[in-house]
Image (tube, rainbow, N blue to C red; front, side, top):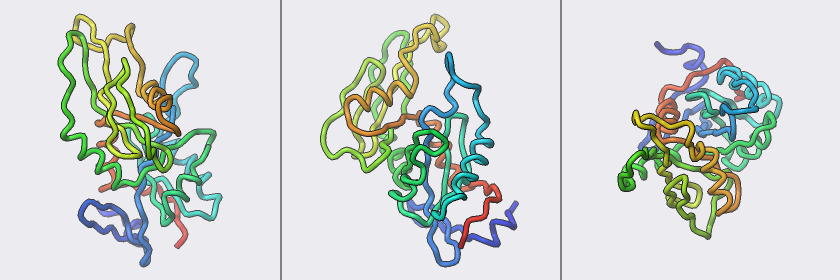
Length: 231
């Protein structure tokens, strides 16, 4: 069912390989925003905050600045958000810097969609007994790396897709029942991000393809949380 509040303020436009909204002759870009360490579980970690609470908290902080940015949707429980803004990538990235005492990686929606397309041709590593391979991506939190290479680690097969994107085959141990062996985990996606940061400069964050694909699919039907954006 159509959202009357949305229809009063925005008109969705669709162009090949590009998603955004148009508000009173202003093109509003859609960004994928990834919180580093948000929602992770583990020993010593604080209780997981609901993503809807993150949306409310982030939008409250974002609305306190002149720069127009707002969270419009999310996917999963590990800090995967969609934001819209008339501002540039550099401006939006700067706005999210240490927001709510958290590191953030911001990438244009089109760039993330292109990275997912690139994964379609990724060949799975050779089968190993007791090993499950999970496909994913890692994104850089800035302008990317212009030089340097990334090498495979014991945790994952890694390869560079672009200056801001790295392809990942995550390596997980399975138990005798062919389920994830939690006693022999080689690290989560955050550990893979850390491995990449040790090889290349800057802030990186990694996610599974399922998570990234789920987020980008939501760009087509993003929820609007009633936070008014100035026009």
